[in-house]
Image (cartoon, rainbow, N blue to C red; front, side, top):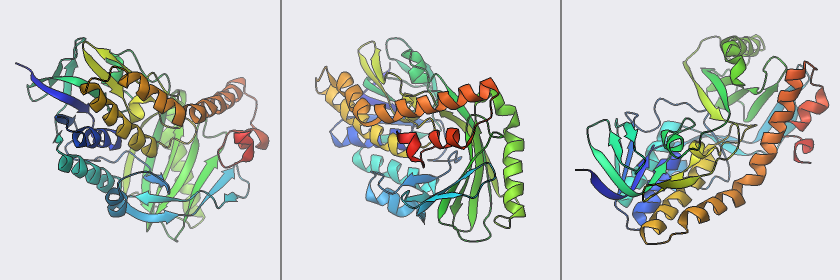
Length: 354
């Protein structure tokens, strides 16, 4: 016999934890599962969030490690262009996720780690790796860029960026995010994100160039070490895929179950910057609210959820998709990108927003 609940959340990153908390606070019987053994680990994130991120105070308070006050953008080998109006925080992503999961548990959601989804049937029955089967009135897919829930409802992220990142010693304190735009990093950018006495150094590229990622990051690391900014040692490695094709349709039905996508599963990560934590938090919260509304008899909850997401994210995502396509076309043509092209393709410049 399958266990029946009001809301089943698949994935307990920021989107899933926020969805579980919101639904539970509205009186729903909620189960939330994640295949990872513990919240936020292994960390697959550059750990930067905007200063105005809308999260529970405790989650940001316990995880913030360093303020970010500016963005410095390097185009090829030119001196950096500095913008002082890009404030944010470097966080401990594992602590951030753990705080959000704790809040979901305190709200009444049953959060279970080390539990993967084995199968999802067309009528909404979920088979779990511990042998249980679960049915739910509403399902929230917060299971990342290659979402199994999204695939089941026919909504797959159309494009992904591949990333690689290393953590290295930071030799002098820095309070800006450094962005590196270069023809040598095709379809993406390189970065240095400072976090107290360490820095995350990485790059993202189109999947066609995935085989070059290791050398690209190694070259960036070597250049920064020659400049005396970082040490030569490597303290950690991570990487993964980021959605870059814009928002997919974020809901459908599986049998009688309303099925919602949130965070990366819904394609809400910015296709240019790769930023997705704030979008995951926001979409998770309103997904939990929509799931609760559905269980209370609101048959428009799915459509309303899509309208909410579109009103907040659609314009920005559409612009970012256009900018990425413009740069991709330049790469494919073999025509070198000049400074004007790079400025149009990156958020720190007014040309991007025109």
